[in-house]
Image (cartoon, rainbow, N blue to C red; front, side, top):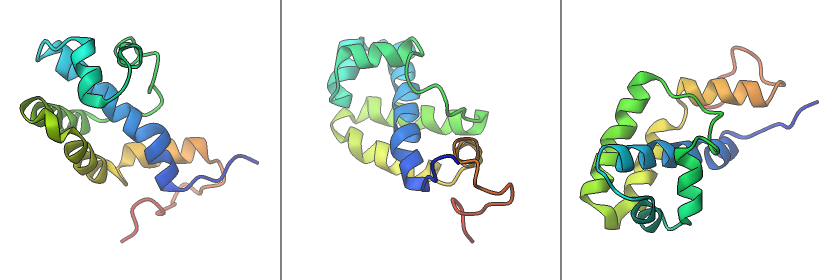
Length: 123
């Protein structure tokens, strides 16, 4: 029997790293920041940013086109307001909590969940 995961655990283990990866890609590829500059904004090592950019980290969560557009919008906010990186990342993570992408990963990682599970997005 697999590990029974709470939605919050998926957010910490998968969502936040995946958001950082996509934000890093936007900051480097579209705003021409260096890996060192992105590492400074994120408060992590340059090698961690490099691993995001080379897809050696945060590969399990697959975002939809709409979700990627929203992430890019927040990456642009972060570029304009670097000192409030955590605030913007927190807002984005709240928006992404309970999305179909995260729910699909939850079902993949926790086989005990039923296909009609509504744990992540209860009405």
